[in-house]
Length: 115
Length: 114
Image 1 (cartoon, chains in turn brown, cyan):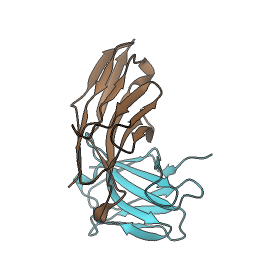
Image 2 (cartoon, rainbow over the protein chains, first blue to last red):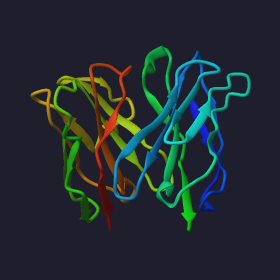
Image 3 (tube, one colour):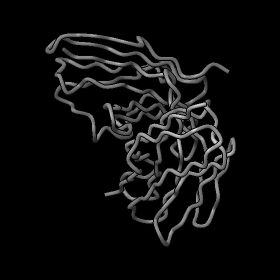
Image 4 (cartoon, rainbow over the protein chains, first blue to last red):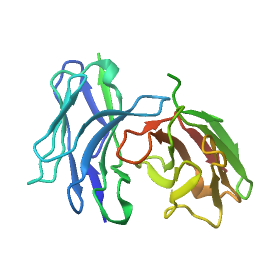
């Protein structure tokens, strides 16, 4: 079945450091890929998405590129802020089969940014 | 625009007791989802409604979990009887009709079963 694997956390960085959170997936067909963010005490929010190979999703300084050849969708940000401290989830949306449209999430990566 | 509302935000019960969670989706959203998020894991879909009909409940433990969306708007998820392993955050999400649209998540209900 479909699955998403994220890098182990937690990740702790100083403000203005470069961020990479790795995400790889296993899926049949051509899924859409997403990054969600969960701030303390809040629900998940869509951060960015990509719907086909080589697409780059971007939002709030975060970027991720859909790499079909390596089945990856790594999240990057050039300069993190304290306000970026949150839990980040990589997810895919099934492209077909009996679970069409269903979201499958990774386990989440906790990011803490210190001043 | 109001977001997805959930209540209660926190609940502590003893094993074998029953509990119910309520969700009010964004106005106009026909599709409603309930997810279970166990600590250290990503959300797992329990059930998906399209209006008041069930689209997918393949991951719902039907011997103890039930959900309804009688008028196609708000929804209730019930656990009876609860087990220790049901301790988790229960997230409700909604979207415009169908899974091709973005899902908007509520803040969740944190359940602790002792």
